Image 1: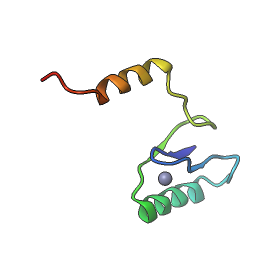
Image 2: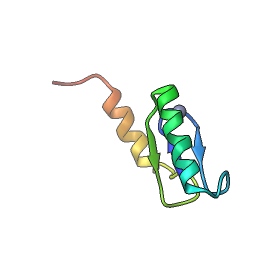
Image 3: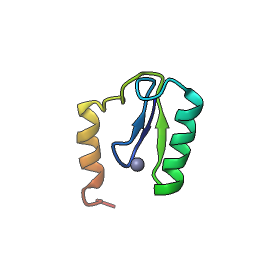
Length: 65
Ligand SMILES: [Zn+2]
């Protein structure tokens, strides 16, 4: 499937069995919104492990540099 990293847009084989149409839809979404499209071999959006949330929060915190 293809999915957007910036919003909940996605296109999977469930939505449209044509990979070519999904690719076009993904490109169109990127052009229209400037959002970043990623893709996965699975049929659902990959889930982010909980540990990544902790890392993300840390990364967003004040820098000690
Ligand atoms: Zn988007």
